Amino acid sequence: MMKKTILFLLFFIVLLFTCACDSEKVQVFYNKHPFSTETIVNNSNVFKPNERIYYLVTLPKKIYTQRLYIKIMKMGANERLGYETVWARQVKMRDEMVHYYTDYIVFRETGAYVMQVYSKDNPTKLLANSLFYIRD
Image (cartoon, rainbow, N blue to C red):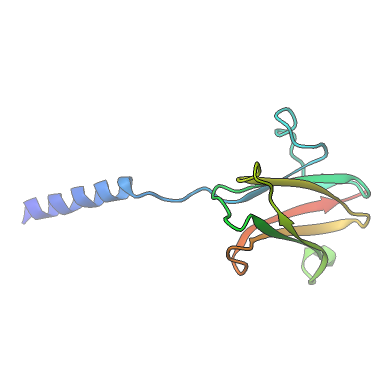
């Protein structure tokens, strides 16, 4: 009986450490300057009105349709009284952008905004949800 228990625990430990877990997730980064190797570390999610907001969406897995749906919603007062869609776009990724997409947007109104990223491969599954703010 003791031998079976030890064998079971050993099997469980080996199984636990050999499982392939997918921990990579889609992420969104924001910056005040175009993304490059020098500016990638200067991330910020607070911007001024009429300032370019450069964003980078990193994709650990290849998207076969090479199309993303990006939607930006403005949060209500005190970040809890509802959402209003202010910008939405379907973008086609270029061949060299298999694992990332980058572009910029400009907003005039101050407030809290939420960017949501979906893949056209599975348009009902939210890939990323990220906050940024525009303040004076």
